[in-house]
Length: 351
Ligand SMILES: *Cc1c(COP(=O)(O)O)cnc(C)c1O
Image (cartoon, rainbow, N blue to C red; front, side, top):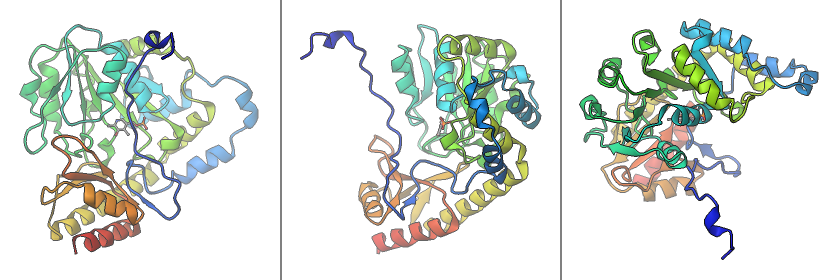
């Protein structure tokens, strides 16, 4: 026992899906895009003038903000950028959840939310989803210190219509409601359209999933200028330069190539529907997915044996040893050939 033991901060961290170094695996465990980023990203990085790295990156994010503003039809003063949406969300928690009342989020959701609450000493309460893993808006009417909802939710892939989000916003005008839209590009409708109507709304998105830039770390929040100002103040008390110069150039190129973006997400949506249909024939039950992953169960049996079998065959998916969801696997939608391999191994397993 070290003498300083009781002085150091102890936290239980978020555990991301593994990044195995094994060759020829089918990696369907962290919801990355199975396709490369836009060719324009490659061009931007190749043409990047390395002499620029001598200088600190721009903190105005002029080009990137212009591209995002044009796409989402929001003002550049409504955008807050960060080093991945995990960083953006962490800063949102620190900035917006500053109350003695508990922050609310679903009992089954992104497992970083309770980690940030613990890290920043924010009280929180998990609100149970219904039996079909739906969020019930009226469960969020009571007094609280803020709300965070992933839409579509993770790891369930279930989407909540904008009318329900509006219902929650309408009943919570005295707190900030964060909508984490990491997967919104795979079939849902963004809550960005509600920003003009609700000044308590903050929408967070990422370039890690639908834009194939997980390794570049680009995320952003969209809100009103007052909340963005508050976020900037907290961020500038921590790190003034979250997005490096190369990431800014790459993300700008990705943002401008909307045709490639649409092509990729449509391919993923098509493969997802085929995967769900095939699993259906094999006797699986899959939740309705609006994401680039599915949440599926084989006859409600514990999913660990299937998870381990797939892993032994080089197909890596995600299993959560947690109440309510241990009969399910979360499987990222890969390419068509990855999906074929996954389905073949599942068939082998169930015989
Ligand atoms: C992947 C994910 C994020 C974070 O992604 P970044 O790579 O940090 O941008 C945030 N929220 C949810 C629900 C996610 O699944």
